Structure formats: C-alpha cells, structure tokens
Amino acid sequence: MPEILIYLLIAVFSSVATALLIAARRPDEFYAARSMAIAASPGRLHGLISNLQQMNRWNPYALSEACGTGHYSGPDAGPGATYHFAGNNGTGSLSVTDSAPDKVGMRLRMTKPMSVDNRVEFTLRPAADNATEVTWAMSGKQSLVGKIFSLFVDCDRMLARDFDRGLTDLKAIAEAA
Image 1 (cartoon, rainbow, N blue to C red):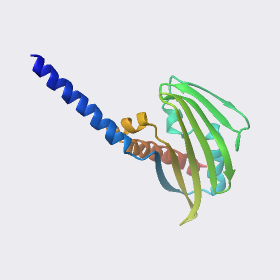
Image 2: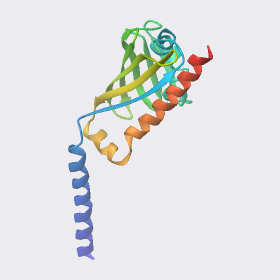
Image 3: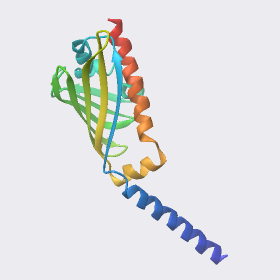
Image 4: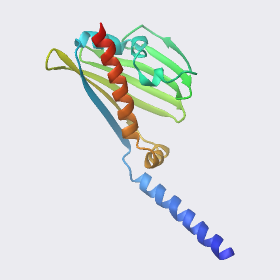
C-alpha cells in the first residue's frame, strides 16, 4: 500500500510540475481581436462606444451581469468616462483613456476574480457600401495564474465569442437608428 501512495504522489507532483513548466513558457502578453462591418457612420458608432452608458446597451459583459452593481463617474463620454462594476463576472472598472474619430482606447482594471490591467481598443475604418469596419481588441499581460488558467480554458475562443456577440448587438443598435 505505501508503494502505491508513493507512485501516486510522484504522478501528481510530475503532473503539477509539467503544467507549471508549460504555463511558464506561454507568452507574457495576450492579444485578441474581432471585426465586423456595420452599416453606420463612424460618428454614430463612436458615440455608441465612447459613451459607456451607450456601450453598456450592447456590451455583453454588462448585459450578462443581472445581479451586479455599477455606477458611472467622470464625463458622459470620452477620456475620463468610467464605469465601475461589481458582480458575478468580476469587480473593477472600465475607463475611456483616449478618443479620436477613428479610435477609442480604454483601460480595463479588475480586482476579482483576478487582478488584470488590460488595454481595450476599438478602431473604426471605412468599409465597402458606406459601412464601417469596427475592430474590438484587448491586450494585456498574463500572470502565471492567467497562463495556467489558459491551459484549461480557451481564452481566445471565449473572448472571440463575447466580442462577436457584442459587435452583433452594436450592429443591431447602430443600424436601427
């Protein structure tokens, strides 16, 4: 019986060590982006993005938080506009850091479920048929915990699904007006 326990402990230790080694070799930064053509002007889309109250009409993270709380601070739109949130999806804030006719930059800071400080960027480019191509991108540093998490959860696919859903909802709102 003690031999089985020793072999079991060796197997568990080897598995944990292997997972840590693989995670440590993953990139220190991540980048994810999705794009969609929307039949609306860049100005219309810019207003639905840089105003966080308008953004939360189509933002899948805000829409999926039925039990959470949130409040806005700073200006209604543009640099300094901030949305503070707490709920099942996490606790943190999203702030507009820069705003130009073709781009809106944001900073996503979270304290739960893990500490992150990510850059979010929306770019608006002319597309065919009087449409605008909207690209939603996020980048940031990956901690060792984040790297381990990404071994078991396909974070790229998860973000792509959320970004696609958000862009689809943005499209519906922007094209309805």
